Structure formats: structure tokens, C-alpha cells
Image (cartoon, rainbow, N blue to C red; front, side, top):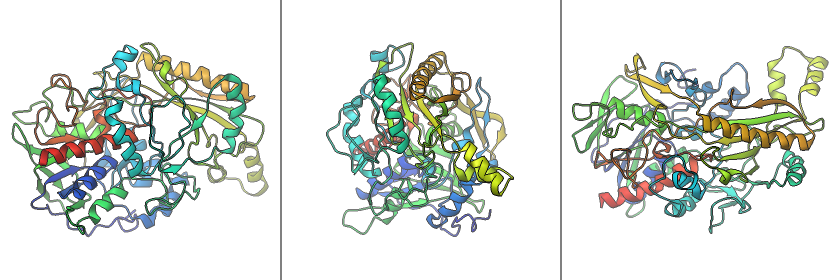
Length: 546
């Protein structure tokens, strides 16, 4: 598809901005939040984004692409190709491009939109569970930022989770009501003594922040045409609009500007060297730099910026850059109920359970249960994947659609040094740089946790009276595409990449805002914690700039 056909604007000025105070690499939720916060505080901010600026008006066409079997998921946001090449060489194959999006908005362009806070014990896994490191900060340190992040993203939720961490602030919007299929699960869970509760969602249950309420397209992952689901372009655009009020700075977002390397002295980054579509390279100088390119591209950029001072990669005196790569693993059990379940009427989760989460110890990790509203195929998916018509098609729809149920779950994976993001020794991208090389394995504790989650999921479906037809267990689990741990946070420069203020130990003017700083991952979707850490980092950067 051409740039024009894909809704990509390509006539922008991509020259460097002089006099910049802050250069942010990456326009996903973390980078965009940092840019907006610092621009509001009066600073001149430049954001360099590797991918394009997508046209909101083109999202319905992208939704159509998402539901047609001809297209693979990366096609929805123009992913793949030489630009996004990678290699997976570990014990388990890691399908990076299945859920990778480059562009203004980042991974939130195609995320599902669930936003939970980590539990208090997640910040102290070593102390509380006997395995893994403790974070150098605790829940209390992030509590204020969690509340701010919920307001910035727009979260619909209810304070009905008896297992969640303490909170005092109400959610910005009321929770989405439980779905019809949730009501089918409720009696079985009650019989088993399993508590169901609402799911905090970064989508509007009512009009919020100038965006519409959810209108039920159901294609939330990978595209929301209405704008009811938050994505990072909201704050990128807000940052660019600043500069009119007294005391505000300005922000410039330069798209299609992949950073090739970071020019530096032993103590500081001097410039981000980026390429533009015309084949030119430019140097963006600034007083401070924020790396917000995610858990794969952030360590890759640091490794690409090696020098005589940093022969193993920039900010990598610890050797931890790229190591301790973590993801959340999926566990699930599904089947057929023999009565209507209204499958796929809701494209996101409305009920879950954290009941077993804090039972975690050294042998079995934390996990959460998710009651699926989209188990089984949708009518559109069925209609588009067959070659039959008329009564034959109608018969197949009646046979295959309408009574599917499933319980899913996310499982923690521990940080292990052998799981890592490195540079491939031979394969290069469209700019001649080594592509990411992913070495990934699952781990025995994660497998035991999946087995435990499957036991609970199976018990729920059996109590419900469903015929179980599939299980995703330890042997065939896959990732949730939550990239964490590759520039971990800590107080010891010999063991970590950034300190508790998110500044790198090795460089005085470089901060990292990303899930890559997570010392452990817990089993909660990471985006709200990413946003909270981004807001925390912005405060520390503002203090450092004076």
C-alpha cells in the first residue's frame, strides 16, 4: 500500500530542532507522556519516532484490514519487511512481529487496553516470594503516579477488586458492565468460591477528554476506529499543541525518523543521530535524552551506540543492557457450553479474578484469570474464511458460532540473564544496522504456574458444564508481547542500568521510560505501570534541568 493509501503523511519537515532541552526517542505512551509533561512545564521538546504518523481518518480501513483473512496482523499497521526484521535464536521461538507496531502511538495503537496496577508484593518479589530481585521502589512510591496515569489515559473501572492494591482515588470513569458471558460464569465461580471483579480499561465508558465513548466495533485489538480506546498519539498531539499558554514550552514530533545511534562522550549523550525517508542523516542535540522505544528497541539502540568507552554498548557498564528479557505467558482453557454465549459481542474483557495472585511463592508465580468475551470465532471471521454461500454458509455459522466459552490468564516469567535482546551478527535492517536477536526460554517456575492456572480454569469450565475442547498449557504457551526487563532498574550500578529516578547509572543526562526498566514483571498488563513510571521520570528530569 502506498503512503497516501495507508493514510501516512509524508511531506513534513524532519530537520533537527535547535535549542532543544529534551530529546525523546519513541512516541509510544511513555515517550508521549514525558513529552507532554515536560512541554507543559516550559521546555523545548523533540520526539523522534521511527514509524509514521497515521491518519485517524484511515482507521476504518485498517479495521476492515484487521478482519479480512487475507491480511496478517502486522499488516494492519504496516509492519514487517526489512525495517522490522529480527531473529529468534533461543530455546523457544519468539514471534516479535505478531504484535509490533511502529508509529506515533507505539504499541498502544493495537493493544487491548487493560490497565491494572501491580500488586504491592510485585515490588518485593525477593522478599515476599523468595525469588527474583526486589524493585528499588515500592508501591507507595508509584501510587500518586498510578492515579495520575489513570487520569491521563482515561480509565474506566470500579473499586470492586478485593485482592488489588490499596487505592483512595476513584477511577475517572465508571466501569463497563459485566458482559452476558460474564453472567454465565458467575454461578460456577460462586459455587467454587472464586470472586469475579471488573477490569480497568483505558477506553471510554462515557465521553472523556474530547474522545467518544466506546461504540462497540469489537476490533479493539488491533485497531479502534472510534478513538474511544486510548493510544499514545493522544499525548503526542497534545504535546505538539502546547506553547500558547504562558509558561508552556513546545514539542515537535518528527515521524519516520529512526535513531541510528546516540553520539556521546564518556559522561553524556550529545546527539541522537537519526535517518529520514530522503536518505539523509541528522543530529538532534539536546540537554537531556529520554529513551522510550520499548523493551526491544531501547536496548538495541544502546547496543548500536557502542564506542571505545562503551565497547559492549552505551550505558552498559553493568552488562545488563538487553539481558533479563521477560514477557507474560498465556494460559487458557476453552470449550463449548451448548447454549448461547453471545461470543464476540464485546471485544475486550469486562471481568477477571486476582484471587490466586498473591498465593505466589518461589515455586509457583502470580497469575490472574480473564473471563473471555471473545472465545471462538466471530460471524464475520467465519463468513470470510469459507468458500460456501447461502444455506451451506448459514448451516456452518449455526454449527460453529454462538456457544464458545473460555478462561484465559497471564503468568509471570522471572528475569533470567540468558533471556536477552542482542544484535544479530549477520542480518541487517533497511539502514544496514544489525537486527534484534532474541534469545528466549520459558523457565520451570512459569511452566508450573501455567499448570496451576490451567487447573483452576478447567475447574471453572467443568463446573459451568462446558465441554472442554482446547487447552493452552506449558507445552504450547505463548507470549503476551509485553517486553520487560532489558534495562533493569536498581541501586547497584554493577547489576542494573538505571537508578530509581530512571536515569542511567553511566550517563548523567539519559533517562529510560519503558517497561524495560522493570526488575520483575508480575502478571499484570504493564502499560499503566509504564505510564506511571514515565510521569515519575518526567518529574525527575524537570528537577535535573532546573
